[in-house]
Amino acid sequence: MLLPQLREEVCAANLELPANNLVAWTSGNVSARDPESGLVVIKPSGVKFKDLTPENMVVVDVDGKIVEATHKASSDTASHCYIYRHRSDVFGIVHTHSRHATAFAALGRSIPCVLTAMADEFGGDIPCGGFALIGGEQIGQVVVETLANSKSPAALLQNHGVFTIGKNADSAVKAAVMTEDIAATLWLALQMGEPLPIAAEDIASLHYRYTHVYGQ
Image 1: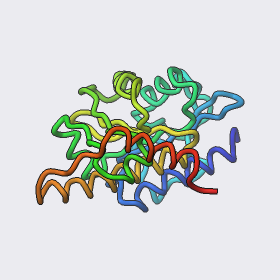
Image 2: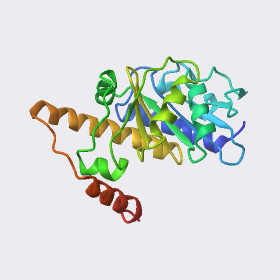
Image 3: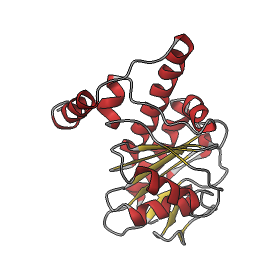
Image 4: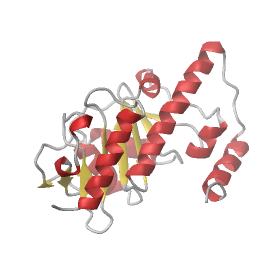
């Protein structure tokens, strides 16, 4: 079996999605790219999360061609692979329809950076890209374009949901969890009034501290 360790990592990362209330039924997926071979491991299409195993993860090449599989690959595979081909720094991708973040996507609205936790993690707004149909590379194209001039590891897709990127599957899952948490907090704030802005220089300072000082 190809890439047994990466299969385990991707399977475990997929299980974090329902554990963090980011998905319903079989929606959503996680993939990761192997830095040595360039091969991609991704969730199989339409399989319940409770039935996921390392063995039924799907291995494709970076163009989305099946290399080793017992199941069909996720319907988002072409878009994941497009992102990998155009972002050499990305080795993990997550897609969800998490409720609060997707509510912003339904309105075609970016999530403004009005929380220090958001400045830390995202370095600014979470941008919202345009509409794209599922099944081909179009969603991947929108994600790449939307994040081209952003520090954010997350993008919203109009009328669709959330895509996050990272240095591995776990970091992309973290970004997806934080995206939903921030979206939920901002939704609550909007019920009470207009959120207060954070100055751009303070956002930059917070992001630098988080990425260069915070943690071990």
